[in-house]
Every structure is written in C-alpha cells, then in structure tokens.
Length: 96
Image (cartoon, one colour):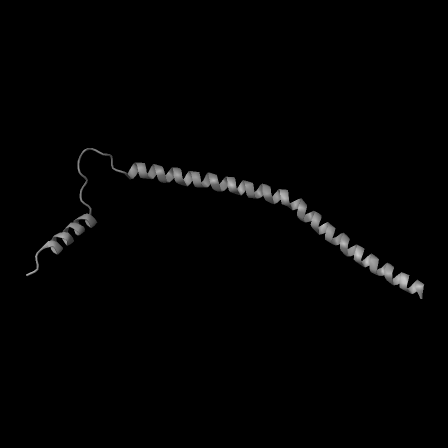
C-alpha cells in the first residue's frame, strides 16, 4: 500500500514538474521577446517623429508659398466679409 501511494505521489510530482517546466519555458520566451519589441517600438516612434516633422515642414512651406506678402495694399474683400457688411447694413436700416 505504501508503494502504491509512493508511486502515485511520484507520478503527480512528475506531472506537476513537467507543467512547471513548460511555464518557465513560456516565461523565458516572453522575456526574450521584450527587448525585440522595445526596439521595434522605439524604431516606430522614431519613424513617427520623422514623419510628423516632414508633414509639419511641408505644411509650413505650403503656407509660406500661399500666404500673400504684405505690400501695403489692402487685400481684396473676401466673399464672407462682403456678405457680413451687407447684413450689417440691412440690419442697421430703420424699420418702416
């Protein structure tokens, strides 16, 4: 009877030990992947920063090209400004 119990304990011990070894191997694999994923995320962050810098540079250049230079002349009135002036005149007229 003792032999049967000892054999049962041994089987259980082997099973639990095997499961523990598998979990340790999984943990080691995850830990080994961490530096790789950190390196990849750092490279992605650098690429995003470079991309953002390029986009901002292009937008700045486009604004410089599109912005009229000050020449001392009043710019032509835009449609919205003219519309606003017309509404103000209409609203400021006395009611009949």
